Length: 201
Image 1 (cartoon, rainbow, N blue to C red):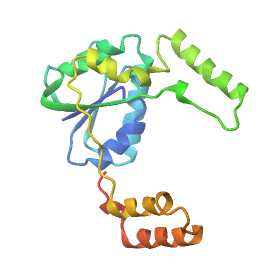
Image 2: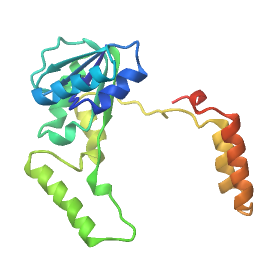
Image 3: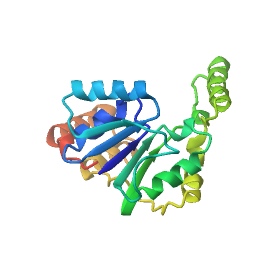
């Protein structure tokens, strides 16, 4: 059983449910309109393994230790009490359960060539988020927030780099004198011999 916190209009829900057809999802959002749109989106995609409901992340109706995994994507940036929200979600995990948390950081935006107007626009977004009670820079604070919430954090690579891909990478890093056309031919040969579907994610 997977809980998707703050599903919005279902942008992430569709991908999650389609890639894990054997899993059961409960997706909630504080906005009834967003939940209704998310349901329409998944219905149109023929998805049947998701249950939607309206709920406030600070007053969730679920029993403790109800879920095997919790998915949080671009939610904490909108909250004035993100650590508290993570603590609440953590209580819903079964022993051995896991949580995925994805957040952005508008302050990590760079431009080339540099543009003062673009930097001002980003700063405006950061300030508007702050005035609304959120934090557009929360990405850089994610680790300490999760520690504060009592999560047991263990860092590990998402997946090993496939050997064929490593070989293509080495063409450009370890053999700088190789011609571009030769490197391109090697890359194309790898693409023909390896299916992306076989690369573990």
